[in-house]
Image 1 (cartoon, rainbow, N blue to C red):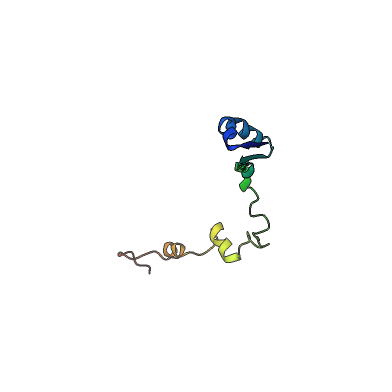
Image 2 (cartoon, rainbow, N blue to C red; image 1 turned 90 degrees about the vertical axis):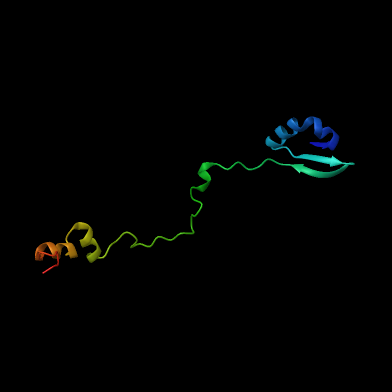
Amino acid sequence: MKVSVYEAKSKLSQMINKALEGEEVVITRNGEETVRLTPVPIKRKSDWIGMYEGQIKIHDDFDSLDDETMAYFTGEADTFLDRVLKAGSDERGDVK
């Protein structure tokens, strides 16, 4: 669809609909093409899903913990607090 600037003033709504339907809409001035009306791409919320695909590497051992760290999570590690409770404390609260 090609229209002059003069025509475009009265047919803007129609031109927008045509552009949204995929038709090429061109506005001319003195018979020369000057402006092309195109729709703006719609951003969807799902566009971010997968946007980093192939850019992030998760190593095979990502979620594995060494024995010492795992012991702290399972309560098997001998922590400072454990040592304080086992040793008891003097009247000032210092560890014996």
